[in-house]
Length: 351
Ligand code: GTQ
Image 1 (spheres, protein in one colour):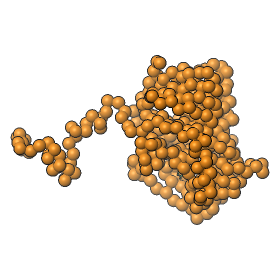
Image 2 (tube, rainbow, N blue to C red; image 1 turned 60 degrees about the vertical axis):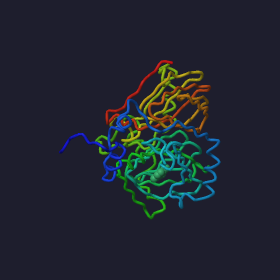
Image 3 (cartoon, protein in one colour; image 1 turned 180 degrees about the vertical axis):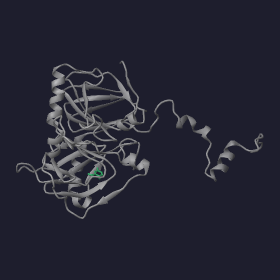
């Protein structure tokens, strides 16, 4: 290599020349590539149920679940238009299934969670077992498992059902590791009775010869009733964190780890009149409001919210809650991945 001072060429001309052979000067971009703190483009956003629900109903008139395969309105971060992403790593959408409809079986590498928002009595089936949905339930579709959805109602009561889908679609896209298969069947054959996996793993017990063979929890529905009871008991025992209220993470009972390998899920209770101290972390999160009314301050923005509203807090944005009524909030983030990569940071701030 001949390193002598090059004269008579501007840096700009140099950059233009080397671009032709797919080279780029790091020094023009170093501060962005290796930032002093997270500098993503994602912005906080709020989706009010009152604004969204009429359009979900319209989607229900426009296309059937069967034709759409999955009839979903995607919650897109306003700073990531056309990317079908709510943060850089996460996808969120609201899926509608009307009485009598089916959404046909398929399987994909992406892991999915369902958090039931409105209505009850729809089901999702995973690997031959169905679970019936009620508001506040957290349901898992593990990577590469056959799944389909339907709505036959419950006890003769049949109503439209809407749930929040949370998937790791952007992560799988980032790794370029996506595979998918569709089935010709209308719905998969039921091979196990409803409640089978919950009986095996939902009571702090497990089949005597169980060996962990999957990165995903063997429980596929975490019913709201139990989650709510745990939060309520802890609240009455005054185990209240000043930054989070009473906040629990869902666990895989077979490992103690996260229920899903790529997505962490949480439920928290914030007592009426409580104001949480400001907090920030590198795992941006999507929130679904289950109960109560209040507001979240995120940076300079304030979102007033109530039941069935959704909002996103991006990475490293400082936020705090105020509860006008007792709040119950579900959330999900990419925390398991950041923990595995040893890059998660969080900070409990003082007001
Ligand atoms: O229910 O399988 O929101 O495959 C996006 C992709 C839901 C699903 C979504 C999917 C599904």
